[in-house]
Length: 204
Length: 204
DNA sequence: TGTACATCAGTGAACGCGCGTTCACTGATGTAC
DNA sequence: TGTACATCAGTGAACGCGCGTTCACTGATGTAC
Image (cartoon, rainbow over all chains, first blue to last red):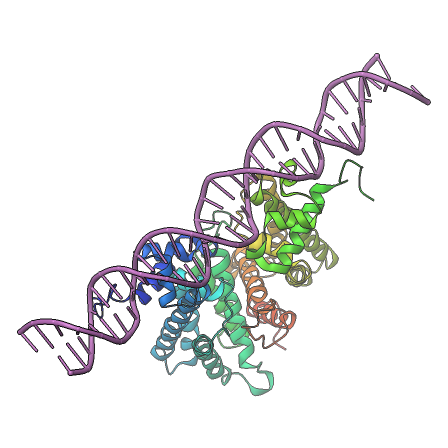
């Protein structure tokens, strides 16, 4: 199963996965390079053969997350073509689905404090993900009369903000915030009302 | 100016303020009890005369934040009465204004990982703040035909999510996320479109 | 096929650091007489 | 008003801890002849 048989086989990826499950388990604060190394069955010093240090390891988690995220959004977008509306709604749902399925990735992408401009690789991955939602918004904006059409990047930002807010406030198992509704329902209805406000859905 | 003249005067509050400015400066990660003590001109050990420990100090920052937050929202709500619509919009604006003016409080309330159920005091303060937005949503919901009226707590949650998302994604000076629009404008237009979707604003 | 060598992934010990927390103390403040 | 005493806010030294990182090393792997 390991790609090749050096000492470990594929330590680099094993470290990424150890880091991800650790972040998922202990939250953004609880992650340490030493424990990630231990989980991968290796001395902390071994990490430095594959990463520049702690931050670099987290950045790689984020990078892989953005790639997966972009794939997921792309898939959602493609699947509902050629309906601009359905595609747009699907990307919103994909956002939440990604956050729930891959909390480790999500946290390293959005809550770890790592700048997405840290390296060109990371910036590219982040940009690719963002571009898909903006593309979906752009398609959708064609269906709004040109004179009362807000910039597509604006409503892509609105949807992003609502999605992110739903994740942070209602889709984490923080015992403090009692979630009044299932996050999926909350986001679905929120986006629905918003799109009605844009005149893209008939009032039913 | 100090309330009384023990040794320090009012160390407890001085520590809270030192902690707040430290959190604002260094982010959720950078805060340490020791440095907060140093900033207040005092030995780390002195903190334990006033707080149980590090977490307890942050919790007090959050508690004070929720109280200020509630006051601000209440003020916004009252000011625009009796218009349910104007009052609701004002509370949304107040959310963002609070986050921008008091980043230290905001971070300890929403990003520090402190559960708002940590103590009854903290839970009460958090609840008071939440209740005001829900009250505003309740008022507003009266203007929607009863048969197509979503639960008030649902759109209070929608607005909360969008506001929080705007703060996290666009109102922080993270060099990664290039904000396409001023956060205030983004939230204002977002809430506007949403309320239009609810049929509470005429399409203009 | 077998031997000598180069490579380099991972080791293990050590480092300096700053953290949160504890403890016996001290000395300024407020109070009783 | 003055003295003796109790209180208790803040001190300073010490602790154990786990962190991220460094370094000279070792020993399994892959390669050249």
